[in-house]
Length: 146
Length: 195
Image 1 (spheres, rainbow over the protein chains, first blue to last red):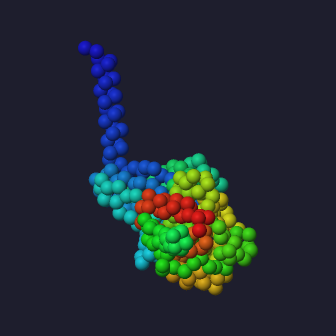
Image 2 (image 1 turned 135 degrees about the vertical axis):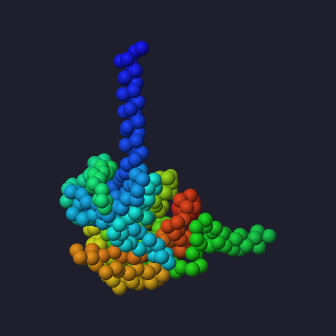
Image 3 (image 1 turned 90 degrees about the vertical axis):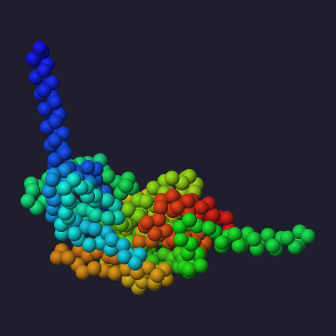
């Protein structure tokens, strides 16, 4: 009856559906933050990774033009002592979330090669096994803000 | 009558002073009073006497600690920010480096400035740091360096609190709820000058 509106409606529905599907069936990162430390002191990167695919994904590292070295680290407590160790890879099962958060997993960002200040955005690329690398824009925040 | 009551009153006040109830762990009978000789952010030798008159939160760490140390210091900062200005001015945070090889007075100054004026970095010779670490049963150890010479330091992550006269009061471990730490820091700040 109103072919134009009908096709528009179908088109909009299809668009909504496809973006919804693209979001639900993909790998997503939320709340990416870099806690910036002054001088040549290493900073830390935090984020939440969502695996919306139907298979396990394997995070194997990260890199950034702004830092000479990026390691995946984990803080642990043993007998009241804080320890830190490098983590070579992290599996995230289908539909699961994995969080890099203070006092746990973090990206250790060393050898800063670009000037950064609070409020900047900095791109850190997450690397997976068997998947395209994923550039993520991290918000640079003050150590006092977290 | 009043001659009899007066000494009793004094005894009660003294008992109240040493028998504070803390929501975090009470260490008043366990740890020795504040006593150290270290090097401040200007490179000068300092002792606990230079920090008398304020409540002290003592924390051991190192600047190349990207996660636990800034998280702990940021938490203390958030707690201090929530205190009234007059109470906040009565508290200082002493961050003692257990990594004197990398942590110079200058780098400690840069590091603690990121958290606020209440945060003071202290370092020293290995022997000076061992003295204070042993005194408070704080252990630390160095991991094997990686290919680029970077190494991690394992260290006790508890915050030790002392009153304005350097007497030990409470200890807050990392997993202690914020509300409990905040209540104890506020209480400690209120005690300043009350002796």
